[in-house]
Length: 367
Image (cartoon, rainbow, N blue to C red; front, side):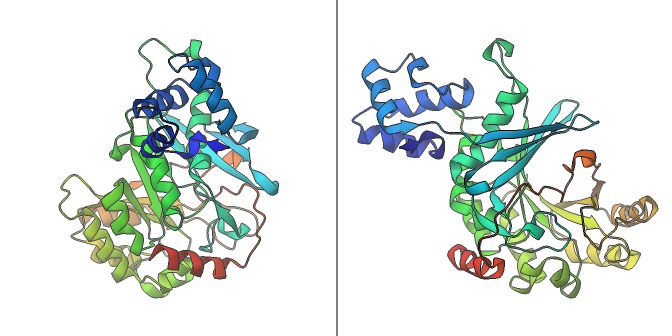
């Protein structure tokens, strides 16, 4: 059975053409699934009865099961989604005035082994397919606005922004991620502009060019250190793609795109990367790149050796960047009482293989 959630518009068009149907069937079905939240083929009333019956025989619209929902004191929501073989993933919705941001996952676990991240400590199982990625957006919309009757006539979506900052490294699952993003951006899907979709990466340099050419979005770089020696410890992929290569790829990504900037994410770790000399080095490192910096207070998780920098240390670090002309924001911690804050997502991962061997395999496929 073909899961229609796994197909973007091009894929759906090819699917219906193989059935002898006109290409416009793809847009009709996309609207039913992604805009009307209809999963029953019989309810797709602008399809012929013959086609509806055929779809029931050869296709499905299959979603992960919502296993658990938690709501934080600040109204952040976290969902645990059950997948196959005992695996699960997490996604988070962060409501703000005039804005609703959904943080979604791209893998079961992560192979990159960043030492400050709860996901990385669980190991790696597999990539999510396109259906499992886009289903997170479908489910969150459906959960936040549970029935069609709840939706006003001129329906405005609850989720205004999507960030691929959940479990996994999106750029080592590039084929599925690109298809999912195309559905997010499609006017017959979720109609999100590229500025409202942010992909966070530790820096899989060979994938930047393809992302820019095929499906550009806002790019966030998990930098976390201003030099190779320290970044090698915090973000081991830096040993393969050191900072100079990473920044060259960032410059190429924004070249010729005057409205595009790079967000540099910098987690604040007490007595590790938070000194004033680190701040000055960071200024020198990224000067000249159209960029903004997100300073992220470290969010603790079991057995971590790290602590968050103090508020004063973070403020002093921020002021140095601001004085140098860098747009700098200290990210507000949301959902930490339900382990939904940045770096805390864990889910349940059956680590079926050595993460480093898997990482090498994925990097070869990427480059």
